[in-house]
Length: 346
Picture 1: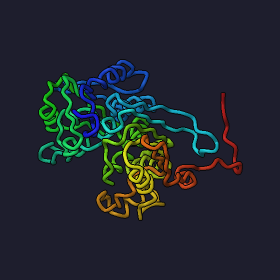
Picture 2 (picture 1 turned 180 degrees about the horizontal axis):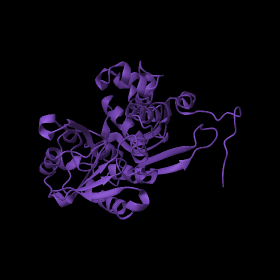
Picture 3 (picture 1 turned 90 degrees about the vertical axis):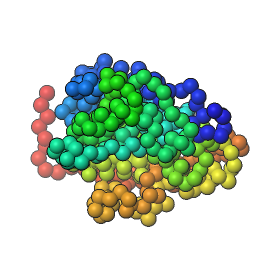
Picture 4 (picture 1 turned 45 degrees about the horizontal axis):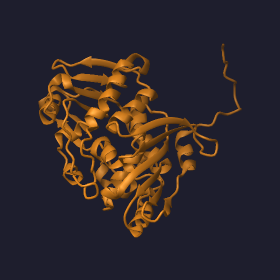
């Protein structure tokens, strides 16, 4: 495999094998992370990170790194007063194309009808390393990557476990025995779910760069940050907050090689403010289009602010800007000095 012609020029790297110790740590620390582990009737490991279990931000950080196939770091930090929000996620990868598009991207469509489930229809987009075992998406042909591993892990943003027909499909498509597959369930309404979605801020930039036609093989490093909102118990609102965190607060720094004109054009075209839908909460936009993602301007799905640095020339270009004032209006209720004082008991 060439080191320059293929976006995923990473011969020998297995995202599932690299993620395995992270999964084992998640399972070993299940009680401390407030997640629950069980096996279904087939023997598949199922991790509940926010359905019946409470879940946690710490669990979400680990799930974020698992999603990146062990090729990224996701950390929590305190924001400064100038940043306007108390808690931020920092994400970094030295293999951003493989980590983000070859693993983390939620691109595997999984569904089952009411007749197939014997109850409610099921739909989810699978993300994480097991996608690279099944390679059901056209993207993998472009990446030139397929994983071969004896273990697989997939993350599903769902509020109920997948039905047997979906699990059977996963085992078949990944060519794994049941005991070798782990499914991590992270509803966006949970602490872990909100955290792992916001940890996709770098992936959103990579996906937008791909949509713009930028040569993926020229993206060699990536770092990103985004504010971490509190989850909402309402599914649409929870999804809206995680999207808003990236669209209006996400900041990304990409290091690229190649033509300076292409790097400059990427910095100009990538930020979310290029969208006609920019400036309103994602939840409101989603409701306005009757919950049809395909009616939302695709240019909106991008971080707020981007820097692109060229290895060839040493130059850096900047585009977009974060809008923390908008996020504070959407997320923050100021404590008032008026009215009765709350009684704080020791």
